[in-house]
Amino acid sequence: QVQLVESGGGSVEAGGSLRLSCAASRSTISTYCMAWFRQAPGKEREGVAAITPGGGSTFYADSVKGRFTISQDIVKITLYLQMNSLKPEDTALYYCAAVPIYKFGGRWSDPYEYNYWGQGTQVTVSS
Image 1 (cartoon, rainbow, N blue to C red):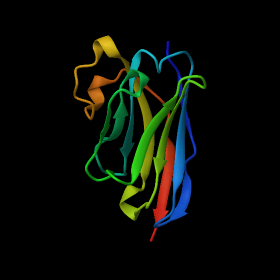
Image 2 (cartoon, helix red, strand yellow):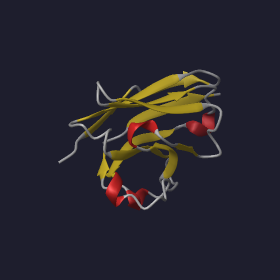
Image 3 (cartoon, rainbow, N blue to C red):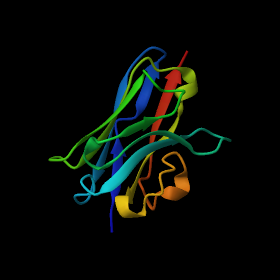
Image 4 (tube, rainbow, N blue to C red):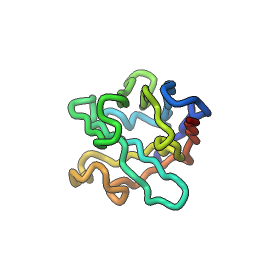
């Protein structure tokens, strides 16, 4: 069983930065595709960014390209999301997700692709 624990959320003003972390319970990074999703009140869960094992490929939603960066630390078994130039529309509950690479169908932004989820960390951006 894989456990994912997010941290790093908080409240910032527009234009500010935050770095989210997702600590995994085992060596998921080397064999799992991992991603960040977010969900705002009344909206569907949205794929923000994803990364393949070893960081070979990364994917981003158009709304965050150039502002957010996904990365991973294999030694620390931790996934990161560096968020810069934050906007009020980035306000949401952010989730970490993972799926074994052999089960990954390529639809990185589809939440049904992932079978392990964290509990989420809240990000609030004020104008």
